[in-house]
Image (tube, rainbow, N blue to C red):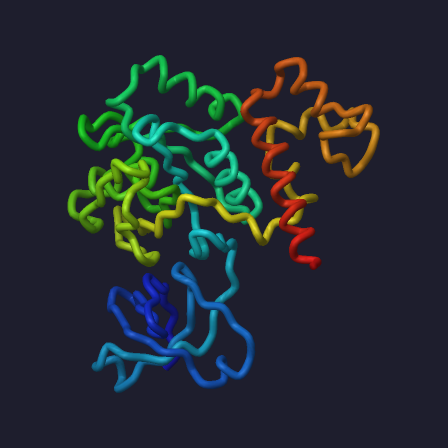
Length: 296
């Protein structure tokens, strides 16, 4: 009998599937291996149970259609991506935040921003950063796993959702998850005093049941790679550009060197936050360099 389930973890060629409340250890059916396929944590799959389900083992026979798929961290069918950066220790990076927001937008995954370690800054300092993103339509939570600030509101927001936490190492992803549901994630690492980065405490993506949905901690990364994005996709990943693109003389417009550009004019007039436009130009140049490298 074919059943459906959710891949909650994959490791060394094995897939661990939540099938009607039973955890089934699966491998992939031979016919799937004969053609190209991808199978990620978060995928909904069809599987055949071995021994009428008594062994807790089975074979995945097909992957059901995805509504979205994030490549880094790699996870499918997300309701939300919680982009997590610290307000301090390490210092907040507008560029990293904007790269992660662009990746979420390109993958069609709704993003929520969580600013951790709110106890290390003043409320005014936290709001100065949060307002940049609230004003362009993102939900922002300033939280502290030590004081509990913002944790209840965040817990309620994630209830019933399939959610992944993504961000660099050492910013407090796992600590925040443990504050939302104590013990839900592994012991967190400490910031390296020499390089101001956290040790990579999470090695793979895993979904954990939570309040009618699932939570995922994801492997930390210090360098956000955008290898799969084309330069032409980037303007669509900055939602505040849309209201100004209609006055651009050229279409498509890169919003950088063109003589008549509504986005560039808005940035010069302060209608677009300076940090956002600087991030856009920086990311666009990176994408162009990646594309040129790939041609060689």
